[in-house]
Image (cartoon, rainbow, N blue to C red; front, side, top):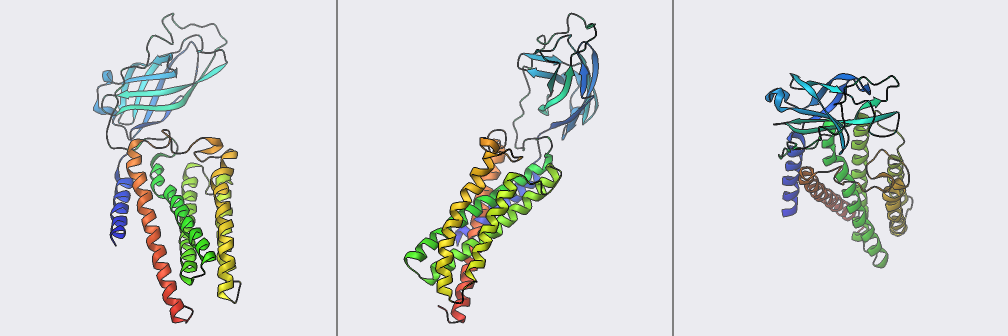
Length: 350
């Protein structure tokens, strides 16, 4: 059928684009990462996927920013390599707010690379000694303006996750496919309860089996991502725990089906169980994790996949990925249902 060919085309596009499109330049870290007010500090900015040597130092600008009204511009900028530049900052004698220390964002504006930002890059501490910085050292003399905004087909740079951001196109769609397949499964379970045709039971089981398969793939890809980004494949994160519980509930669905010598009785009880299993799926995956602190995006009530998680370039790959993997999931389920139909006929059960 045409939709099977479409799934192959979409998934080829997702794999090629997801793996080959480059990331935007970013800042991995700065050195040093601490400074005192009223002092002159030379700071190195270390870039990722950057090409600082493609521009003269006079065309590059750097800032340490507290907010839109308070920023320090770097002086005597020197390009050390494609991934390193150096600049001197004269710290004002006072902090931009009444506290002992503040965190400043690092910003690099490059004519060809565009703008790079590293939040909370430097900790500036108030010096108790008398300030010796010149009167010209001010937070408001050099605002962050006239930035070079680079528009091209590239994925956003996110500190800590780096290239693993590409796993968004493979890990997250697994859960969409799981939901679509489990919805189809519970739909045919309900139909079986009203009209006990064997084919309705086969479809309910086939869609549930395939949904469980994609749930396992989602769990594995998530653990690989967690190992890279969080330092451990399993950190007892609330969403990891609730996902494992949900998959175990559906695993019990298949154990229940095989617990009766009479196939029709097992199918009917499994259909009832499937309805309650699906009813537990939504709170386990989407409600409970938002009630607790979590390392996942969308925790504590914040919506996932907002502007901080997906930009327009990523959406051009992410949404096709959901469609492609969903079509693949229904394709696999259809093959499983056809196999079960042939098996039942061979055993004289149909």
